[in-house]
Length: 315
Ligand SMILES: [Zn+2]
Image: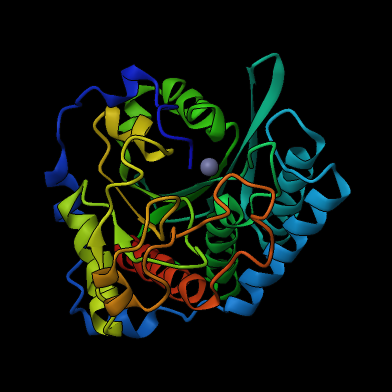
């Protein structure tokens, strides 16, 4: 997640709501056939991706930041996995702060390309550290979900697209570039954009974006079935890659486990963890390492990503 105040003013401007589209597209969570088909995402596999991202940071000066070698190495790791699994991948280049940046887009062949269910996460870290919770966690969660789609040979009704964004920490530069260069006819085909930025915070909360009611209800149904209370996400409003999509009227949703806001005693009572302490006290610091992950939060949120992709995608 970008630091508070990083959001460009234009991103905060209101966009016409098109929530009817997503409300219609969100399948009822009670659809038993859909529920049975949703796979359990292996948290061990998600952790293995995080271990790789940690190694990449360690080998490249301790970070995976925009314009630094650790960023491109991270992208190459993820692209390699997706290519081997049968995804159609595209690397989109842009320039920011004098350096070349990269977005990675991966399409799962098939499904109705006029109805795209799009999941994304930023892949860059800040320069201060390896960025394993922010945002190796979201990057690894959607990677393992995509690989599970491939492993199962899923044939969803809708078209599935995944993206790993560059230069989010500089103000959602990569995702803004992508949206700005997407023709309006292509924007109209996106049923919903799901954003995952920090999903394994060490002192976790369970926050659901409340932007689009249809998408929000799918995530809430998942957590409700698991008996995990959720709250509406407010800390990251306008501060991550869903903002450019929302600003052009695309329905958005997502999950978040908390950054430098402090967990209250009420929150500690319902979620466990430590009150009076930040959800992620290593946010944007050198200690955002492989040790800075709560495995339960990572597991639940990864499963929730799959639940949303399968449910909204009609897999
Ligand atoms: Zn961040």
